[in-house]
Image 1 (cartoon, helix red, strand yellow):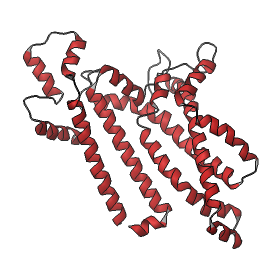
Image 2 (spheres, rainbow, N blue to C red):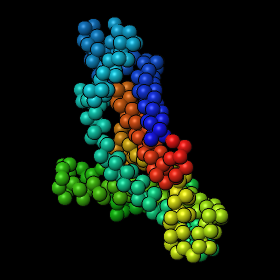
Image 3 (tube, rainbow, N blue to C red):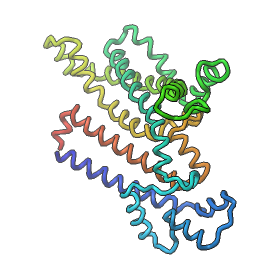
Image 4 (cartoon, rainbow, N blue to C red):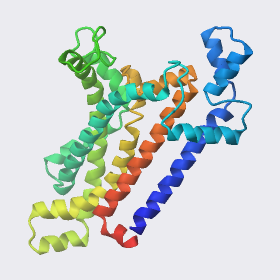
Length: 326
């Protein structure tokens, strides 16, 4: 219990630091986001209207930095992330809410499937060294070294566009109205398959290599020899003794991957023009949309922290030594 409380205190402090940095960085950056918004709109506003925009975006110069910081926390506690410059006057929460399901459907699903498949194949490859599974190593090593976006570009060239079986980009066909009907779902799935395969192939290869190497290391330990000497079934030794301990480093890596799901695989979403959070972040950077950038960065940070906390709890269940340290 003490271990859990210590970890919760650590992540609470880290979350506070992340929120504070998220507040400070846009205010310390050169330039004025409100004037940038006005210049893009090519409109003429009087002094009172400009002052109202500063208040609206939480940048009221009549307030000190401390007052702005407290007001920012008050907004966060009420679920208010401000208004997007790019989609003004749409709230940031609504913009992120529209793109988040796309990222979760694409990157979330493929990350979980890649982890399960890659870990399973890596476990078999490490347990049965010298068998046909060793033939997977050159292929997986090659695929794991290919960047997401490069494989995506190759996939678009070979499999998308005119005459290809997959769409070249976007989240669904033009003219299709989003909704819970088969026309939209079928269109969305067809647009998701190619980027999903791109992520799945490269990510799964990394899990195969990692798990295989850990299995080889673990199978050389004395307790594995003792388990065999006791006459335990090979399946039980592999799963309950070897795989359980070899899995620990992969759990940590998987937690980081879970945290990055919300941000999506940025370059993949850009290459495929996929309407997820990563593509939204790319557009926000180009438009200098500070409220949207702040909102996405905050969601990313909290997602990574939550995923790491989950990994710590899984570690506690898998490794009894962690519980004794608590």
